[in-house]
Length: 195
Length: 196
Length: 200
View 1 (cartoon, rainbow over the protein chains, first blue to last red):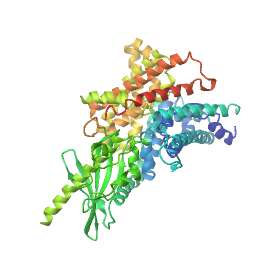
View 2: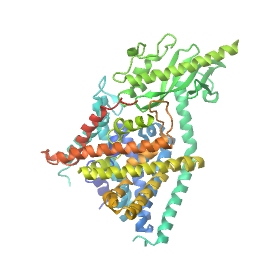
View 3: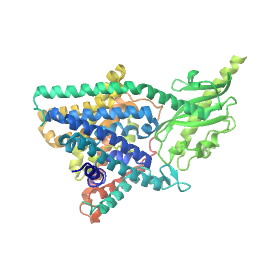
View 4: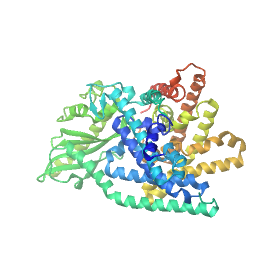
């Protein structure tokens, strides 16, 4: 498959949020606004691409029985690097996303791609897979964040377009579930014929 | 093909992976240590300049603490211009927030009037209590002197317009302001003693 | 008294699944039957209490004294993974019956973000249960983690009960499976919002 094909597959056919339904915790927890959703998506993508590349390079030197612990250590290392970099250069975003950054370690998407793709493909292809899945995740989170922000606080990307408040429930926990459910239905209907 | 899963291989590969990762992390930590500290200082400085009148000293270098009680020790950043004090930035807190501690930087001028407030950290509900970070709420305190402006929400007989549907967060904010003002009074009392 | 506040606040007010969004994957994955949900909840409670105990000690007696707080994420996840493995082995030896009941859930727990999430939370956040805010001590940490796990269990079992009923209802085709589960979870979250403000 071509590199572009791999990337596209991650965004649509294997969309981690709407199709594979993985990594639900950050999807629901950090999408109170479009910017936060996008930040979380990009942070996950950073870890995903790097861990995919390194795991595909190292897979052949790691004995089968200890591969999962090894992958987890590699992923945790990149997550920590991300934590340190974010604290240093984007501290305000780091504060907003808080606990969800270290929790990228246990995001099923990252370990899932390592196990399902990176350990049997070349580094180049694995990087593309990481970019594709990462973009799919980022797009999904941004859209969910945007919808919740528009309905809940009457703004888009931090710019207010109505005066006064929106429907608060959408910024709070229940709204996260509702918005994700409806977006998932819409996504499934739209991509039904794209195979 | 993967390496054979012999005991020696397993231990060796796990140890190696852990070792390399730790070294890598140590390196990144070393590189980012200074910027992380700088970011924290920059955040405090930004909050200080947002809440006190113009100054020309470096408040974080003249910092001191005021103990109101054993559990309540507040950090104070004095602001001076040409050697004359122009105000104090008091790092206050409250444990009465809707979902935990709220930390607020409160600035006073030398008369004790509030020049500004800046929320340092909070975990209030987005869209409700979190509105304490918006000017529409904290703007009402600018220029008010707590000696005449009662730091209670209107519901409790005070002068503060509470955030709609977030009375608890508003009360918490008032609590943090009162604590900061207490610290200011204490500093003021000490200064007057010195003058005499 | 304080322990009571911790427990009520962790189970109802700050429910880990419905208001903090941790552990959603098992929440959606193993909640189709009440029995499996109960098994999962029991296994999570066990692992969570034990891992919080161990990671708390590691944080305060190893990482902080050595000044390597940045190794937190890496160490914690390794500890949790190792603990889960160990529990699996021990359980297999001493109580085959319990192993049979809980065994299949154990491997899933390593990647359950509740466990790592709570372990990090208790050592990094200040709590104020009615009184002054402070970092939790060892006893409070363990009680808090057990209470959080119980909250997970309550949400999971309630949810499984509802989903058993949903199986039999007539649902639009596009909503079958995950979407309707999410909407159900949303309604549950709405219900749990009623508890907020109960404990400050």
